[in-house]
Image (cartoon, rainbow, N blue to C red; front, top):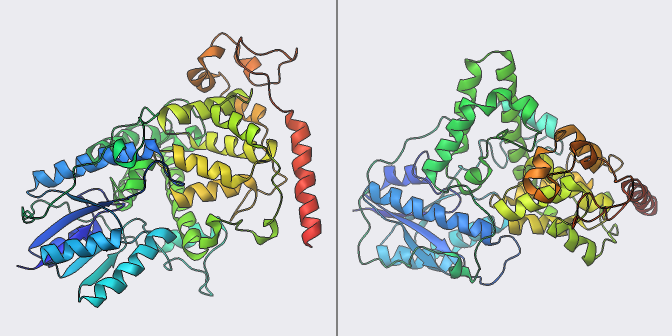
Length: 469
């Protein structure tokens, strides 16, 4: 019997899984494998919230595999070493994998192909994370797009693949293949997650999509910037871990739009545009991997960011005295999630009002978010800092007071996460305290004057550009 391995990574589902479906079609026995990373105590790009959500996803995946006759085998260590060891133990002739869009995953794939080739094992890679990946959406000259709008137009013109099947039955791998236990946070030496996370697993992801399609998608265009209430899909962590395929999400959105009225159709199109932003940032990371360490726009490389550790720490704790910023940072700490509009407000506040290097905020978000996605997170932070692809020009600096007045006029979002301000009128939440006193006992006064810091930022950017020219 031909045996192959399917290595699960960002595709923790058995429905419409490109590499898994190909493996099932190619072999009699598919060995489902997940390799746990071996770091412990702390990591630059993740933290307890995302690892806790991952644990829930793996428990769900194992249960789903058992329901169709198989089981998830867990190993821990260097991915290449562990996969090849499993291949030899199982007598596997091939390894099936869905491609990873980030440079770290790509390097593992390269190493695996080289080492597997030495012992005659085939490695087969598939597109799964994106509707269109890598070199599928290029300019007429064959170059990657650097600006979103023309990329989106080209993306829309490409033919779209339909979702694939759900695996219905699997022959179990040999019982002699040992497995580590399913992980918990202690596996990585982490303490309890701080976030009240959404339910993990494939079924929970489908339910979130169904809820969105029955409700919020019809008003998404106008409501998506409102940080309170159920105004977005809440699918970001599901797409990050592959609990649901991007093809399924796109097809269902298009089906809704086809039968909807003009307003709902426009709202569905707006949501699809957000899916395209996700792929735009993934192709930026693919073609320009240096963005992980450096500004995408080379004009801004080497620019000073004089913000101190002290102001960064107050930002992380949600103690800036700017209610909308503090509410967003408290939401992040308590749930492992932050609304996208709030992400822009907090990121621009850190970089433009507190003058802290965008890389520090980017890393903090990755360590706190359950949906932390390197490409989107990097793209969003560089957009806010004014240094990235399709970035807001450096001289466009959001005022956190007017942002909260516009998107949280009743103060519902602020009061949800800052209960100490529950008795403060909404009007007072959106402006600098006139008497210079705290809005409530124990709540700090604004740590900076936005107009003063705005001028400092404009001067800093101008000086850097002048020196670089």
